[in-house]
Image (cartoon, rainbow, N blue to C red):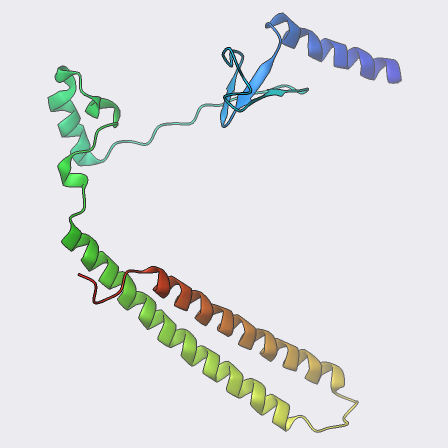
Length: 177
C-alpha cells in the first residue's frame, strides 16, 4: 500500500518538474517568474500540491463610463480600461458634507433606538431579578436560564450602543463646515 502512495506522489510531481519547476506567490499573484530578487518583492516559493488559478471576471463599467470611454478610446487615454476618472465621478465638498450629515442623522436615530432597547432590556432584567424569590430550588434551572438570557440581552444592547457611539465619533462634527 505504501508503494502505491509513493508512486502516486511521483506521478503527481513529474508534471511540475516538466513545467520548469518553481511557482512563487508574490502577494496575491502567482508566477513562475518572480524576477531577479524574489525576496525583495515579498515572494515565497509555493511548496507541494497542484496549483490551479481561475481568473475572475472584470466588473462592467458604469453606464456613463462607456460613452466617455468610446469618445476618448481613439485618443489612447486610460479611460478605456477604467484607469482614469471623469470629473462627474468626483464628489464635491458640499455633497460630501450632505452625505456626512445624512450618515450622522441615521446613526443618531439608530442610537436612540438602541438606547431604548437597552433601557427596556435593563428593566426586564431588573423585574426578573426582583420577582425571583430567594431560596427557590425547584425552578432554579429555568429561572437561571431566563436570567442568563435577559443578562445577555442587556449586554448585547450595551454593545450596540457603544458601537453606535464609536461610529458617531468617527464622523466629522456636525457643525464643521
